[in-house]
Image (tube, rainbow, N blue to C red; front, side, top):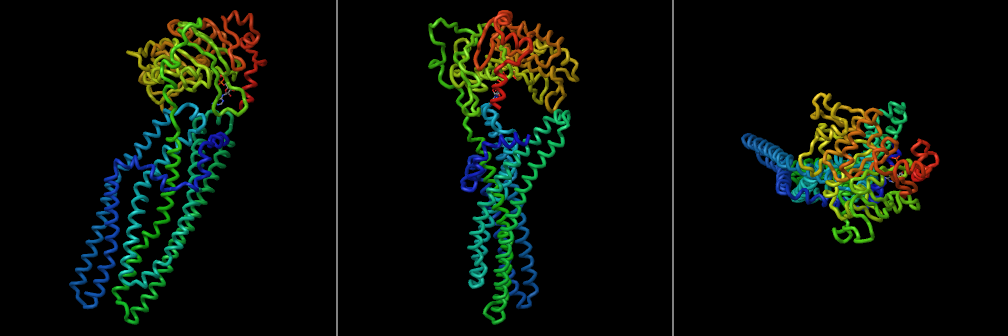
Amino acid sequence: MSATAAESAAPRDLTAADGGQRSAVRSLLRLWPYVRPVRVRLFSAALVAVVASCLGLVIPLVLKWIVDGPVADRDTGGVWLGGALLLGVGVLEAVLFGLRRWLVARPLAGVEASLRGDLYGHMQRLPVAFHDRWSSGQLLSRATTDLQLLRLFLAFPLTFLLVNGTTIVAGCVIMLVQEWTLGLVILTPLLPLMVLCSLFEVRYSLAGRRAQDQLGDLTTVIEEAVLGVRIIKGFGRHRSQARAFRSLSERLLGTELHKARLLAGIMGVIMALPEIALGAALVLGTLQVADGSLSAGTLVAFLSTALALRWPVESLGYLLAMSNEAATATDRYFEVLDTPIPPDTDHPAGVRGAAPPGGGLEVTGLRFEGVTFRYPDAAPGTAPTLSGVDLHIRQGETMALVGATGSGKTTLTALVPRLHEVTSGRITLDGTDIAAMSRAQLRTLVAVAFEEPTLFSASVEENVLMGAGGAQDPDVDRALRVAQADGFVAALPHGTATQVGEQGLSLSGGQRQRLALARAVVGTPRFLVLDDPLSALDVHTEAAVEAALREVLAATTALVVAHRPSTVLLADRVALLSGGRVTAVGTHHELLRGDAEYAALMSGDQAPQRGRERKRSAR
Ligand SMILES: Nc1ncnc2c1ncn2[C@@H]1O[C@H](COP(=O)(O)OP(=O)(O)OP(=O)(O)O)[C@@H](O)[C@H]1O
């Protein structure tokens, strides 16, 4: 499993490699369209925070006034007044910081929600080929951890880089005005600090990218372990699984420790250099007070200002680190969002949409014409999975598709609802090229049921109705009857309202397949594509489902992948897929008599099949 996660990491490793060259600011600027709607609140909050922070710098000035004025003059009333003034400034500062929080909390949650909404919508529209390449953990970590990092960035580092930057500049001006020689001493570490911070930024952003990608891999392993818990337990693989998890988690730990070391290094420098400069200024200032060239109040005010700048300066390391992580999260987010969505239709209807006139071709029904398909991620030099498939399923006919394991049956059926696009050739429905139809239009015409029936965390009824498409008044009860699912559904605690799927009641494989079948037939589609829909049923249920299916199939044009003679017998004709092409078409009995490969497949003897070898070599 770790290997799976590592392999699927391919799309983003490329970006990780040049992570050092990208500009964090340019990455973060891409968030502007999302921040734009809340910009007024965000800027107001920043302004309030700047005022609050600069108010803190008034405190040393009040102190100077108290020391040089009321304290020197032994004026008790003046000291009380100064104290009250300090309290007032402190309270105002606290109120303003509270106001800042109130201003940003709600809008930023909205920004995170719209970022997540766009990511989810885009992932849903991306083709199956994209999801084949990307591990789910990588997508999950982008939709969760990365987006939280972005919200945190907008709430704190973005504001406080501005606030603390302004405070530091204002503080430095105040110190220079009070005593410029001491001010220059305090500013000495500025240049080395800037150089060190920019070096830190480059190294930290590389480490940050690595850590976020490794977290995605770890998420994939955890997800696979949860989904595959039965297999892990059944085969006693928990130790090897735990080892795979530990190795990935140690890799992440190593990267996090590296990040912590980098941060500790820069924090050490950021804290130590200003402290040394402050110590030097203190000694110099005390000497100046001793020889009378500086008032005690000015020195107190100067040092209080320097101390007030301590937090703004020290926080810079954390703020830079958080901003870097946010820039990496933004890059990872947009890697998904920048993946283009293929156009809904390849070409307008009419250009290639209608079947060529004449030529003696019957236009109705489902027709494959010279269909060749190669998986985008297939190894270079390997033969295409399908090459030059020609097949015509007449209107109202049921065609069984038979072939050895790995011969491309599932691939061929996936081309009809355009889960993958044909590499060349075309598929027509009643004479219209499916590439000229919008996906919405295509999906109202074609319904599918796959070998692995996926149910969603929803009620039985909602799961079945997902197949209704644009059908008027879809009849759930009829669909359940056809799929022979009405009996067990009625026995569920809440009938069709029972929650099933991952967060609902667990159903048996056969029950799931029957619900998937009900989903395929509920919209009474014109074309039905079933990928071995009866594989998990016991003999008795299969016979009952077949009887009901026969009725449905009579009213539609259907392509049914079949492994067993009982399923094949549902069909009017059978097509044999071998070596990526349709090598024989005929009735079950014709092929049984005339085609040795077909006869071997139906007798369960698959040894001579070429397809199996092709599948192995492809892997
Ligand atoms: N996403 C993919 N990327 C690359 N190759 C793939 C992909 N999916 C399937 N293949 C390869 O395409 C070939 C055909 O697979 P397919 O699943 O269509 O066969 P099948 O006839 O349905 O097999 P089975 O009877 O076992 O279900 C196999 O060699 C398989 O390894």
